[in-house]
Length: 273
Image 1 (cartoon, rainbow, N blue to C red):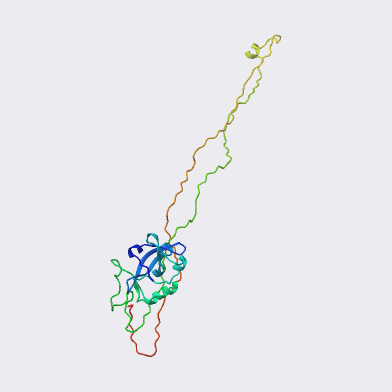
Image 2 (tube, rainbow, N blue to C red; image 1 turned 90 degrees about the horizontal axis):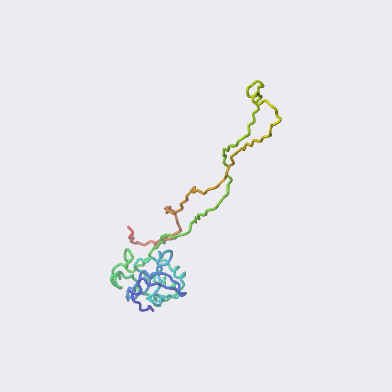
């Protein structure tokens, strides 16, 4: 039995599973074609909410702030039948959803997503082709809808690496050649000519001679080592964004409809031309 829901409250309502874990946000409400009562809701799930999954409102219970709670787990809801939210559900698609959730279908004539402007807008008129089908089925005939999977690709951020600036001190030995000066003692001895005036001036007795001392001081340079600190290098580290292209892929399935007939006259009409 479908609950009495206010369509305005269901818009963007949050759906929680039986463990009070958030499943996603309500995107569209599908109304019963005959009663215009809310019958199904599509809930955004998957990576970045790119996937929409059908949830029967028969099993939903309103909670605080207009949100909904359903008696299923989040993973169970995400694995529901893959039916495209194209604006209309066929009775066979309804049964598929009800059977998956273990509910009993009431056998309606399909459900239709309301268009903007009112809950009943968009319902198919009497005698008109069913919404979502290119051509109505022939009178007394059967219909089959082929579906296929499409890849929906999103992006998520991951840490690719880290860089650290670390300053450390290393010790190296440095040698410098320094020119230094020093004084050396030079001794020169020259013989004196006995007949020279210098020899005659120094002639005489040594009786009164006295000893004398002369001191000569020698100097030399020695290197003095001191140290000073100077800046030699500056390192700047920043980030920039580059765009690469990566190719992703997965297997997708599609349904193909084959028509097998006995040897009878039949008319074919290709609606995909």
